[in-house]
Image (cartoon, rainbow, N blue to C red; front, side):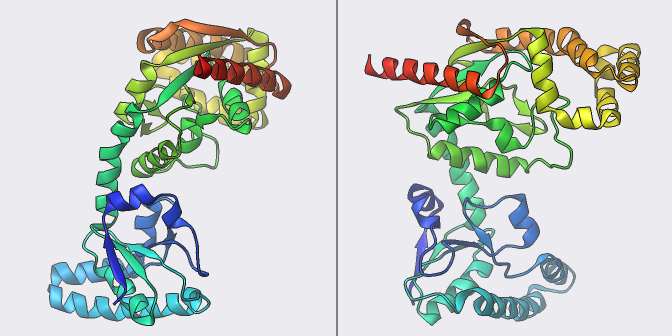
Length: 365
């Protein structure tokens, strides 16, 4: 039977090649339920549930309230039906060169069932021993080791100085960029949640970071924005945050007027929905006091959004940021300073060119 067992570390070592699609089918199949998959999954995986959400609960309830034998009988019937559906929907068009990798949670029953059927058909199937749980353990073990081999340059600068825009410009020029806010789906501040979006789970955030770091070249600088230990509700892995805090920095500077203008562009949803903006400020009452927040909310109601943003910078964001960056980032006192005028695309492209040229000179030296 053409089924090959591989360890989670072997899977990690083969990324990203093992997730590529060949022979008409996906390279990596997660057979856990939809909710398990949504919470976190291996990079590049597709979800073919052996038991869907409701079926998994049903079988689990039988296991606890009746016994394992009765649960296994019902589970086997459900799994067989679902595998049949996956074969009809996804496998019939695959040719014999397809070599999928399959995994489930840990025990291998769900993934083993699919692997058995695919192997009997004649496909060469790989099965990850220990499933998702083994993968996560290997990822968390590897992450600090990987971080230790990489070189970072931390982009500092007060709120609205164009740090994210610079990361985007660097990425567009093929520089190595680790955008933690993009991975966390959050802009990091108390007002950083984009309306209508949700953050990934902590486990999936870890997976996204680990996968991103695996693609990085240890001989080239990785640009990353100065962050606190948490981005929204998600914690940055300790090894990574410590590496960032000990890395060289650059410091972006921009006038208050330009920063206000940039923020109104980047947070246009607050301009479009002033009630939402006012409501979000309630989160600052404990820090800034009810009277200050109520005054800002009244200013918003009067259409003075620009003035509120300016006061937020002067009275909240700048003092907090300055203390944090000076306390936590060892390279900040010696950071190269870049003065910006508007933070528009052309200016960021010019700065990116300058920074890449400087990095190339350092490598040659």
